[in-house]
Length: 297
Image 1: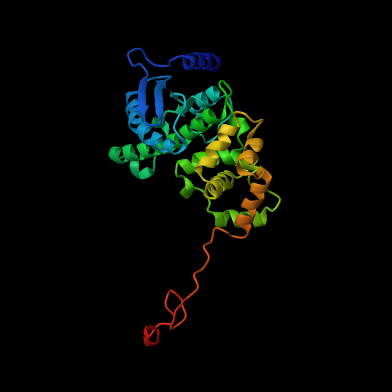
Image 2: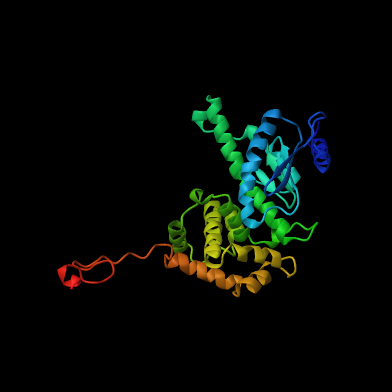
């Protein structure tokens, strides 16, 4: 079968229910909404894995109110099939999210640590952890697209990289895998011309660790300053405003550019470092009062 014909078959199957007869799509009811599993080529091992991983992944969506529409997870067999279905190159990517669909490269083919290659029990634990973490991230994308878009629009390109990836990465608890604020601060000293938020999408192609680290910490900075409710109001605002900048300013009272400047100052001035506690002077209690018998009169 030629590549072109395989692509046509793949896309035709994806348009409907791409499953093998006798193995209909599984519907998983989670606290965050309905999630459906479908396969280009059904595999029992992967199906069982996803049935275990999906409910755990969906728990984090409650923070943002849950899904507004059902989402289907479409499992494909290879990376090129993932790219064909997503209609874009995705180097190093195992999944792609849309408003009502997550396209997932079959986890059976994901690499495993050397120590797990001959230990099926360990391999199973690692694989489930990998899949659960990835689905937390991708399902958060679907949630934000549903919240911000008017069907059938896909609003991915309307949401800036730093907000889109920052929200997904923070919700999935991925902070430990990205550079900390101290590293971003040092990187900016060497690259003063770069705007970490404005240039995030371009930076993701040349220095992805810095791009995703900046997105994670910028979104964390936003949430700590304004709270979760503000995030939801920004997304809701995109449904009625021209785009993200207008919605952001309407809700926060500051422009995206001003917020970006504040975040840069936070990194440059190392605002992430806790202020040192002043040492207590000898003979002084924690309340600042003199200690000893004189204080008992």
